[in-house]
Amino acid sequence: MAGDACILVTVLLTFATSVFGQETSSRCYYMTDAIPGEPKPDDLPDLEWTGGWTDWPLIPAEPRDDVCINGWYPQLTSTSLGTIIIHMEEEIEGDVAIAKLNYDGSGTPEIVQPMVIGSFNLLSPEIRNENGAWYLYITNRQDYETPTMRRYTFDVRVPDETRAARVSLSIENIDDNDPIVRVLDACQVPELGEPRLTDCVYQVSDEDGRLSIEPMTFRLTSDREDVQIFYVEPAHITGDWFNMQITIGILSALNFESNPLHIFQITALDSWPNNHTVTVMVQVQNVEHRPPRWMEIFAVQQFDEMTEQQFQVRAIDGDTGIGKAIHYTLETDEEEDLFFIETLPGGHDGAIFSTAMIDVDRLRRDVFRLSLVAYKYDNVSFATPTPVVIIVNDINNKQPQPLQDEYTISIMEETPLSLNFAELFGFYDEDLIYAQFLVEIQGENPPGVEQAFYIAPTAGFQNQTFAIGTQDHRMLDYEDVPFQNIKLKVIATDRDNTNFTGVAEVNVNLINWNDEEPIFEEDQLVVKFKETVPKDYHVGRLRAHDRDIGDSVVFALRTPCRSQSPGIQRLLSWS
Ligand SMILES: *[C@@H]1O[C@H](CO)[C@@H](O)[C@H](O)[C@H]1NC(C)=O
Ligand SMILES: *[C@@H]1O[C@H](CO)[C@@H](O)[C@H](O)[C@H]1NC(C)=O
Ligand SMILES: *[C@@H]1O[C@H](CO)[C@@H](O)[C@H](O)[C@H]1NC(C)=O
Ligand SMILES: *[C@@H]1O[C@H](CO)[C@@H](O)[C@H](O)[C@H]1NC(C)=O
Image (cartoon, rainbow, N blue to C red; front, top):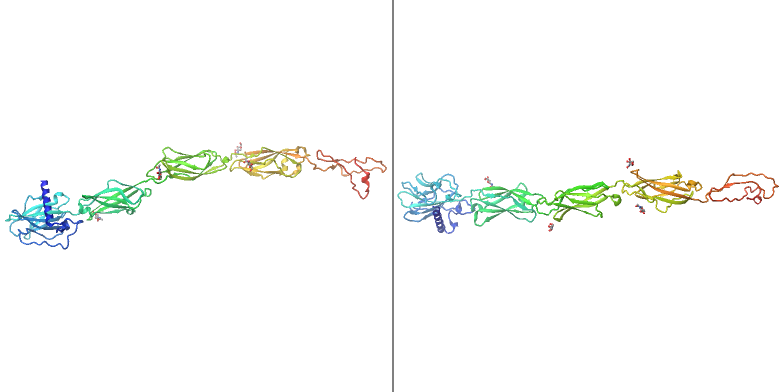
């Protein structure tokens, strides 16, 4: 049965097309073929009909926009007058008079059952008499999307007339169904790149077919600025007027970091206000181009010298959507291995930065600058260096040391001078910072001899020389035997820790020289003798002393009482 119906439909369509040639010349074109659908033209000419039942058995009823009679095509045979072709829109509510019977006889017209094509029950046609006129009514609401409701052919017969009028009723599609956009998968788009169409293609379908698919438009809405970033590119599918495709395009590059997920709505709108809105999620895929980013890091570390230190540092892949393992290294100008960095296993937990025991006194430096570098394990060109400063505190762990343990010098006794040792006289304290010390002289032998000397300056720092000189040279008397070989100690005491001292032994030997005047035991000698004493008479004894050791005293006689006895010098002599 189904096969037979199909053939009949084909025959009828061919017939209609052959009669009118170009479809555009069809009277009901606006209803049958216009895409998008058009309203009934204002200038649609009325059908001219003349005669009675045998000439025009069915004529227009009251005109309405959703029914159009294409024409009457007489084909006189023994049983048939011809065919009237009528178009009626689907989905009309209520009863529709599609034609008026051009019959004024007294009998009751009837619809021949079964119908030639289509189900009588699906169409429910009726012939009704209204005010003495007969009308052909359709009483069942039609739906173009139900295939068995698209086309009906049936005969209308009136009494006393052997030939029937055939009605070919075509139900016309209207754009009444909502389009459907199918978004099954989330859209994934790699970040960066040029504005382009993405690989995100979605299907849009509409039961109304070409009528709806061809004029379909799309609107993108978003709470955020996604409207400026995304667009929808529609595309038709050759040979398929029930489906089409839309492709998401981007107007500017996406950025995974600033927005990894875009959410917006796409609305499909057909020629009627039918619409379907779907929410589209665009997941931005990270494209590797970001170097690692430091998460746990320091700019400065400060700790005491001669201690080993460890610090945890951590960087992550700047491409957080990729999250590669990060390895670490360091850049330093140090010649010695003072700093180390070791990546923790796996490359996702950071690294341990450690230091050797740093001796700032030996290195003469307490500030160290270096760079810690985090890089992607498989590509060092993705690296992020960060400068760090290591400050190592000096610890007061060195005591002042004399430049020489012992100094020996010989100086002239009782002479103001400074001691010019053969070697530099001084102390050094190797500490980098805690290297201040005070110096003082202690006399060892003879006791109190330190009074005779000064030392300048009295304080030193790191490597310092000092001057020692006499301040009370009169104490340095060779003739005072204990002073001939003086022993001094110069003691340097650490300013911050008086337990730290350094001692330089200083030996000062005095050189004897004729620095002493002979001194008479008595200031005057009064003698009395007779004038008659002979030559070589021993007048008296005078004693003079000279303190200079090894020195001798020579006496001479001068006449102190010039005026009284000028010739006495000649008369007295020493023996
Ligand atoms: C979308 O459809 C609804 C009814 O389904 C309608 O009220 C609305 O106006 C339509 N929107 C547009 C933009 O046509
Ligand atoms: C490392 O990354 C750079 C920069 O993206 C790239 O040019 C290079 O080919 C990469 N090297 C390897 C070994 O992947
Ligand atoms: C101290 O300084 C002197 C001269 O500047 C130098 O000769 C000597 O080697 C230095 N000593 C130390 C321990 O640095
Ligand atoms: C100096 O030595 C004494 C005794 O050994 C000790 O008690 C004191 O703490 C030390 N002082 C310093 C500053 O180290």
